[in-house]
Image (cartoon, rainbow, N blue to C red; front, side):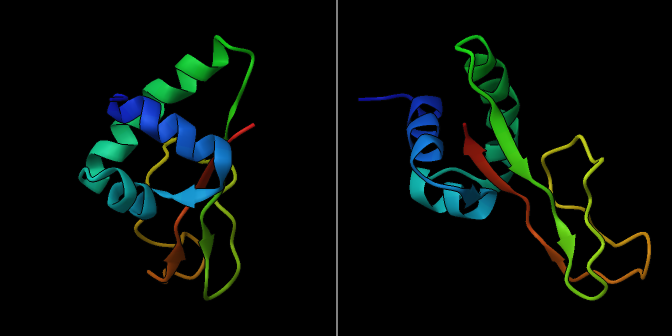
Length: 93
């Protein structure tokens, strides 16, 4: 049986998914997914691959969180203060 990180890597190689979806598929808490994603990024970099992150986006004004380094979803938009934020999406290239 594969480890949690290996199952996440296999999933991320096949499709682009949000942390909430990874949580449901793999069967761990969403907060734990973010911790694993940091280590997965380092692991796949050693194999000349990249953990690609589609940045979060404000659904109210369209602001994209492109400079954000943390994989978690931001709480509020700095431009319009809306809390309607689309989750970041993850994929291994």
